[in-house]
Length: 84
Length: 257
Image (tube, one colour):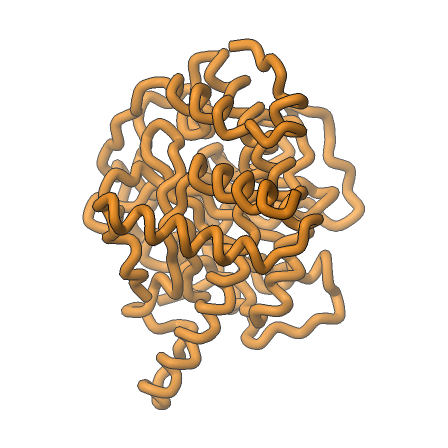
């Protein structure tokens, strides 16, 4: 869906009309599956909403888009800072 | 801490909620409202770009996964912006911990020590790999499976393993949250950033309510470590509606014109 008149709608205070039309086009829901590993259950019991891993040290370059800017979490247990 | 308005589903309740929202926004100056309106435009633009590709904020965060595995982080390893020290991820709790219609929620953080090295937390992060460079949690953003915003909330320290800063400090950190990286999704990163800016007044109120509910818990349980109290998880919450927020801003900006 092309965004037409976004800027003018903003200036005219008519953004809500465009937003309503766009929200109505939201794609279909995705099902939620049950937890599949004991590891994840254990992590959830500690800091269930903590981040996966510390990010890169201050001053480190971000690296190219599409590389691994988010740390080595995939396939590894998620470090959690607190113990129950 | 439950918010009674989360149960307001009838028309009368919706009108009352909108009136409260407009009254809250009237307390803001025009520059703040204009910034929120710009954020609304950016969020709308991101939603449109996502819809054009047949995805919504949730399915975009899932990155092609056909199911939301409970507790797993999406994307794996979270989205981190080393330049702004901001990060976020999406996940879903087990069914009995989700609110009605909730698919999951985004958690937004900043690396507090990176932004404010001299600022001492009210309570340090728990010992562990995060302790040296702790996060501060800004807000949780609940959505349904289409990415429709449902509620905003804050949580206790043990839930996120964060360093605990007081409301004034976290409110300042809120303004530093900015996902400027391109990966894994420019549109999703900007949408999350825009949502935080669009709902800034409510988030500041939630952070203050968080501190109030923690103080209340401390007073009621002086022998317990409130930050590690496993029966005290959600510290404040409020229902939100994307379109109502935009309409409320338009209403207040229209009054001022």
